[in-house]
Amino acid sequence: MKKLQILRAVLDFFWFFSLISGIGILILLTFYLFDSNMDIPVKIKGNVITPTTLLSKLIILANVISGFLFLYSIYVLRKVVGYFQRKEIFKSEVIENFNLIGKLVISSSLISHLSLFIFTYINRGTVGFSIEFGSYDSFLISISLGLFFMVISEVFKIAKNIKEENELTI
Image 1: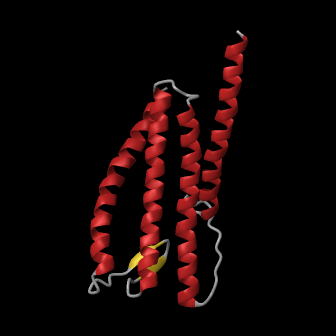
Image 2 (image 1 turned 180 degrees about the vertical axis):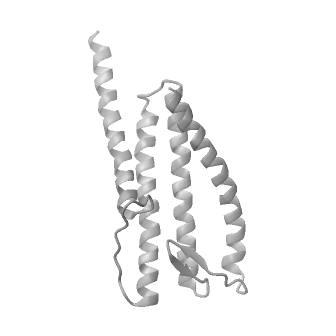
């Protein structure tokens, strides 16, 4: 259970500082997107985006939304860890939350990568494909992680059904 406490502490630490950053980003984003005098470039996954056009502003907004979806998945994961600490492992909320985490991670990754793909295609007129090995920000790793949480949800659902059947036979 020591590992569970460490996980909770790390998630709480990440959540706290990400929440502070998120509030700052929301405040700055309103000025950044609606003030025409602010053309400070933003670097998103190696792409420099200057908010001079509607498309570039939408790409920045899409990536902020993607970040908040990921942040929400961390919040839901904190709730799951809380259930685990209370030894409420096979609750239906845990199963639903694992599935939700998977969907949030996949949605976040799709929004982020597709928006940058569209931006690159429209601005440069070319389509590029890159494979990033050893990076946690990789599209394939993000999709795999989301699918993993969805599979864990199914495994917990099966385990819950088996546990309920075993309790009925006693």
